Length: 391
Image 1 (tube, one colour):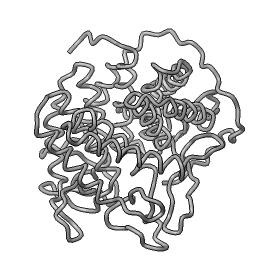
Image 2: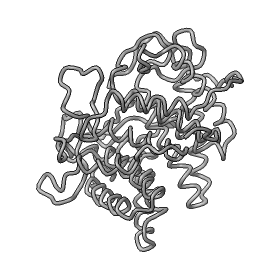
Image 3: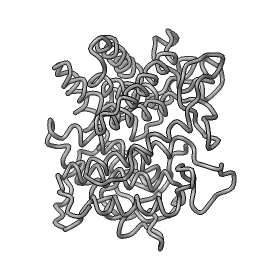
Image 4: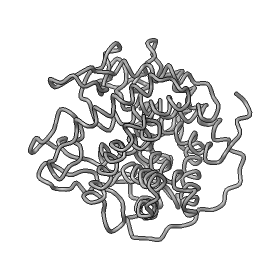
């Protein structure tokens, strides 16, 4: 991933700005479903998996990597919660096409980064597996089918294998590159540990009583390590990772702070410890201050790259909003931003640019870019309590 250099205003520790009130008739659920249907028209493969890109790009595999696939499933969860029938169970069942029963000499099941179309391949990343686990828990909550809870339990066991005592605890980014000096991919990142925490807290709500204490302890330990080692005390946003030498990569991505806001909200609700809520509020304020600025002559925008990352920050704001009224302003800014994309940042076929300001299409062809639109509009629809009028 590369940081964007787009001539936007530099970070200047500005105070959050209240977005203008926009009165319109946008139905977020309609725009979410419209983009989901477009994805299925152009990206879906006969075996139920999806293309990485449309149009195809050099080096594309026969089907997408796990990352854009689980992002599509995550988006489909929001559509299902709204009231659409988007075959969520089929989408979740096709995770098994990424499943590896073991790797690196162990027999622990987990989901690989790629698929042959029949079975899983590639490296098994702990953040990937955590988000797969999250959607499996959601599928269980929606369908009450035990198989999804059983599959989520497999993810818990896989995550445990990623943790060791080096660097004070926490898990590595992936199974293949643990504690390899001078390997940039050998690190303990916010994404792996943050999404593991979020998954564990969601799993905690539905797991058998006998597991609850250990699952909560695991989640709280992960959270504490992240707060101690990767939270910037200046703005309460989260740095990217710590390498094998204990050196912190101070790059900041919106999704890393977003997931920690979600974790703070959940831990506060579970434990009643106000410190967690205070953490979430501080990170929400800090992230708005850090990431929102003028770009392409638009006064208030989120970063103009990697919209799925921004989607995850939105999810943090939405989770926090019932506890903190300022989060609603942050959500309104995001709502205005995605509506600008609808008007000014789409191809003639209806695919959204990576850059929602409209300045450049960039990687519009990526499934991941379109997934972000579906999940964002789906989450906004639920937040706005829209009533689905057409099924």
